[in-house]
Length: 628
Image 1 (cartoon, helix red, strand yellow):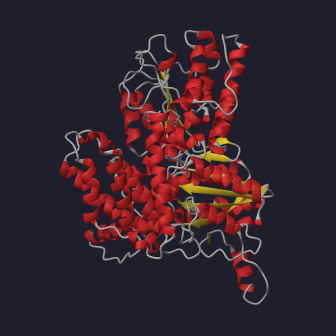
Image 2 (cartoon, one colour):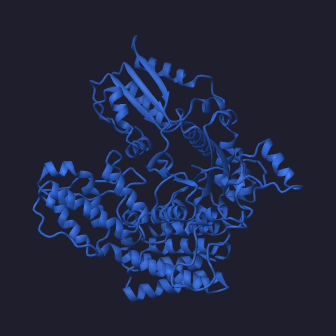
Image 3 (cartoon, helix red, strand yellow):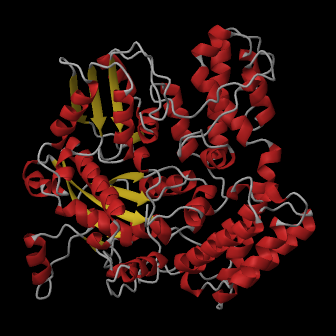
């Protein structure tokens, strides 16, 4: 498997079907060479086009081993290859090539399309693990694209993202968007749904346009059992919601504070050594993806949609029940309202050295240990400190008419914290606070490079060993390379500040007027409120990309008659998909909004990944989302 397939099967659990179908004895990474030399059959799972580097790896593995039967699962539909100019039947063509490379008269190779795309975390929320790194473009990418064309002798004049069509994007990004749209369309096909496509944001516009234009749309509307609307939204329109340090859900703390599971994007590594016979033993990490476990599904949904105290109570009750069933020596049950991470850990340790009980409740124990790790006092200090700064920043910005002073206010708050705590704040923390401020204020945000340099360098190189505060940049960062990162960050922050400049209805996240809380409303919440508004306010910033002839005539008649334009809530089912990721607290907020205020409409939320604040910082600082 390639890395994307590994993450997909990690969350979906469908790998069991492949294991049973192929009598598989071992699973290997596509980059590994430790394949059994006696194996005569192989199954490959590829989540990119078969013209990419992963197919080259397949060829190398086939040539260096003694296979006589090969099966390749590919997540890119065959018609997309044909559309891009390839010969008809590319799957059959490549299968014949693999048969020749095996060099045996009876060798057989087959390539099959397998939609490795989405997986439901619970009934109203799904992620697309194979597109975890799919992130929206920034306004500054328009300038970069224009400079690229000019360097090729093409004198285009691309001023903003609204000037860009899909065909102007670099081919690899075009390919990613087309594959994403095709797989999203396939997901709706499985559900027998004909979807109307809406979008907010430039990258969402590319996807929605491609989705609406797929050939299958015409026939699907005739045979589909139900209709639904999908609204695609760019994460870059509201970064403040994804980098803040609120902790209403336990999931936000767990995903934010625990290290990411190696090779993954939406799961965490749970340190399991507390259950080992020897404390020094380096145990394989646990995780939160237990798709076949009823208690695992229940607890994960709780972590994502309920308040922290409720989730901790659920974990405690489940542990006590397991201890009682196994007749382990439980002395004192934790009382309601007095459950601490230490008490939970003591309950967990009752399973130590008991392999039978451990194997029976391994899923529950991984969730419990994740809670104890994320709620320990030491790990929460930094989180609470940053949340305090964010609250103060939002409060002061909502009370001032001059929001261009955001950077000055932030600088004062950071320097006050550094002085009070004698450091206690990292470069990464400062960058996250800058992203938070920038996204809150929007195009009024003003950041001079000299301000960024003085604020960040003061913390980064304040002592002899700066690496503790600049881990985001790697171990061997020099002052020169650090400055290069800062220039990229500065440029992208200025682009981020313009992300909502084309919007009119959802342009402002901040509310005027001081209250003792975070005075802003996420863009996704604003979008849902506008859609379900009883007054049916015009959705100025929500573009409809599915308008056919009927809708065109309907809109034309609306000039002379009282005929309403198509709206996302015209159908009883609505999908809200965030390109670029979503946080647990944001998911909880949207879930509560829908269930409390709009119970008659079924809303399913989807996103490319589960986010923690650091993820956004990396995407904006280190990743190139245009020339991928």
